[in-house]
Length: 73
Image 1 (cartoon, one colour):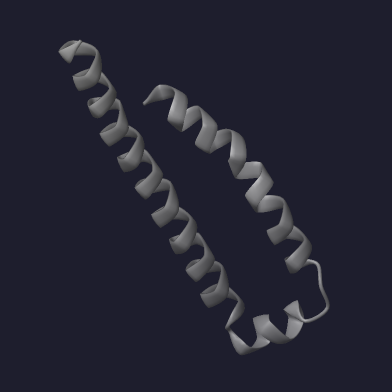
Image 2 (tube, one colour):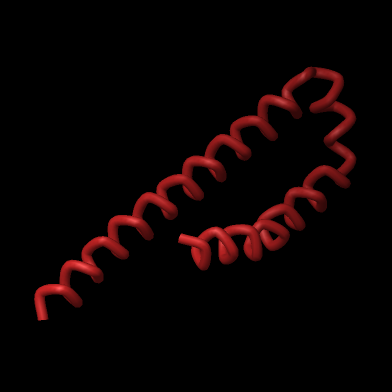
């Protein structure tokens, strides 16, 4: 569990850097004036959070299965 969370935090900067380049474009003023920029950021954050939660859930499930295999042998 601890290793998975470290990996998730290590990949966070790799996923945030492209977002900063998107924010630096000229269209951001238009998106901000329309109020849609925050909606886009919120949707991206929700998708990212969902993926992280799913990966943590999957890691826990695989760890339980690995423990069952080790105990069975």
